Length: 204
Image (cartoon, rainbow, N blue to C red; front, side, top):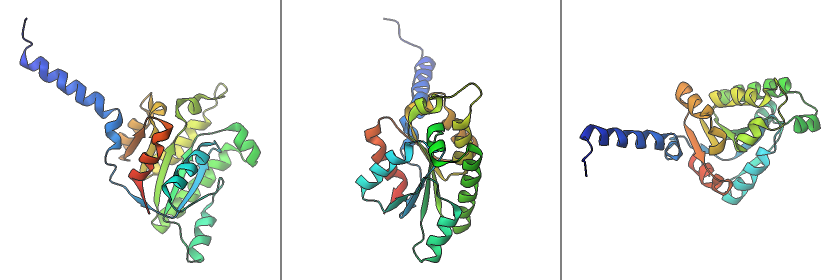
């Protein structure tokens, strides 16, 4: 049997390493750990925050879900002597969810920008998350409707760390953001693994 040239074997090893880096390797050591209590909210009013709340509860992490949390919520908590330590914003736009909340995408973006600005002023950790996969990014989108991508652009580049379900990164949208903005990316493959991903970026 013909032996493969050494440089070919080395090239194969390099390709394997690079492919691995586009998958779960990014989730190993984000180097960012937010603390509790966590203010959990949405940018786009998708069901995603409800899923995250479930796993935060299982982990026993002190948290509060406010779907339309504002900068004033952070100020009020600080004034009461019970400040939040982390703000976690779940991206993903739902026209149905925004309709029920009586808000537009523009209002969501304005609220999110002010919330992140106040979190920065208070020195809080900001975690961006997209936990509903590629289905959420394409679900029910009319031609020209880029609401979901707007929510991603509003949150992810302005986060300290991103938590993303792997199938939502099929087009490497979040990997590219991570590389260009220097924001660590934690990927998880299955819903049941969300708790492990959250434990990588949060501590009690």
